[in-house]
Length: 256
Image 1: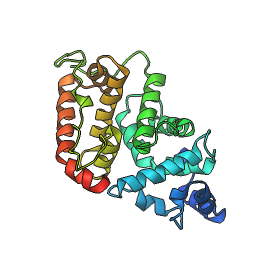
Image 2: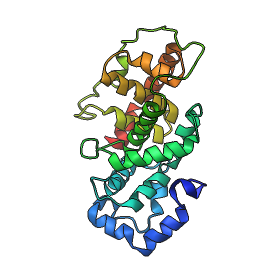
Image 3: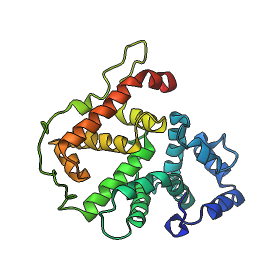
């Protein structure tokens, strides 16, 4: 949770208010995924690193729908989400220290916008990862529209920028494992929460995949935006992919 109450209000005051107003019971009538919870503070354990990822994603999805402007439009749900996503927001701010102004304030403000505008009808999984990536992308467009971080090797082109192997994150599993292809974001969120890969490597791989889907030289754009050369990007990408492939059996056993 944020130490500074100016970012998203006081966590303690928010929990006290939700308890007094019986908000959780009211929310549970709108979002049944919240029904098993007795108190709002239970969410901190259920969303902590190492918690069952599908359960965590279901809870976050319920809160996103409560908070979205075109959902249930609940301001307290927005504040609750801001606090529950504070670790991700703090990590994102730590990676964007070259942006002008108070970076954490800007991250929290933009995260608020993304929560309110999240397209929950179309995007129905990996809520935390999507919100944080959308926040970073929006900040880049707003604060660095015409330039990228300077890096001594930023102009170095060491690999084929049209390499699309990142899109083949996991080959289709055996039929006896699952009948559906694994969704990239779902796997990444599970891997990060389970400690298989680092959160920053998850964010980097997601950035490559999202840029690839937009068309064009994905690795070149992402490497420039992250202030690294393509050799470093490719090495980190391959290391992450190897870890994910190695852990595929564990993923299937947990979430399949």
